Image (tube, rainbow, N blue to C red; front, side):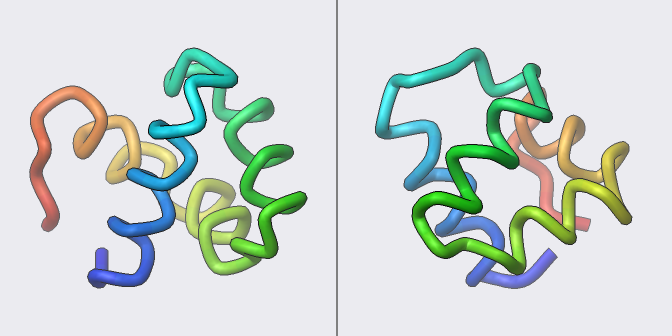
Length: 59
């Protein structure tokens, strides 16, 4: 996970619009904010995304 993805995750989180474990809602918010990299990242790397949400790890 690179810094771009991390920053996009944090930006979505900071909106307070959804539970960050609701990946479909996170993807929708990301899409509407133009964070297309995050939308694709969640599709392709869901385990890594959840690990980051749970533990703050960037593997």
